[in-house]
Image (cartoon, rainbow, N blue to C red; front, side, top):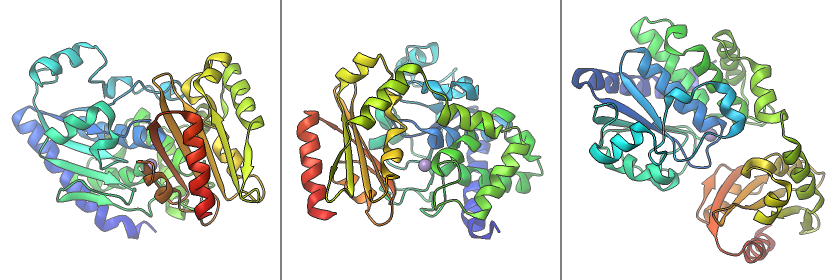
Length: 354
Ligand SMILES: [Mn+2]
């Protein structure tokens, strides 16, 4: 059943094994990269790769451009991360000597992203490393490397990483449970759960469920993952989400739903930036709505757009018009400026295309 991923995952597994060899031989470290506005899939896939590399005795860290969202703390994977602007001992050392615990960086592996422009403060580091490997399911690729595995039909980068782990197990004879720790398995499962909307999106294939089943066997607790990533919420988040839903406006004969959440509302409800994460798919699921967009303004002035469609609208292409990207049915972008003017520009562009 997993036949379609065989060639790509085998190639990627060989790349990772050679990176592990190189790191061990020279006592150097591997850095793994993910995208900014971190989500379950980039965290899950990067953690999976980090666990694989460490299980063979090589040094590896996940370079993260922002703090891990509160709803992912339950994963218990804090020890995998290195935040370049985080002020830790590692960050200070890296700033001064470009090393991590005395080791030079010998290779970069990007998961769920291939472009340094979407890695925030970590992008510059990714660009500076010559040996690059990419495992991603986003179609847009600008990074040049022989070691790319891109499969836009895969549900998630995390599912791809699971196949890489399986291949590495087969190639080395090391058992899968010794390659993916229980916490890493849980993180990889969280990645698949996130990008498939708990196995409800069209990207959920039989092999996606099969892999999720194996990850549960390895220690991933599916109800813990779903509860923390989807259902659990603070009172503040609940109230802000209700406010954002009540302010939805409809355009294009009710086929387009938009809600705008200025920073002042996050302050009013004392809610975190992820306070409206659950709103966009709820809007997309309204009968007759093809396209849903949530615009939120963060403390930094950054305006984030989340774009979801039901059947035919190309979210990725639309987000690219604002410097972002993603998938056909789910995409995002970040802009700066006035949130109401941004909303007007969005309405104009949607009216011209939808
Ligand atoms: Mn993804």
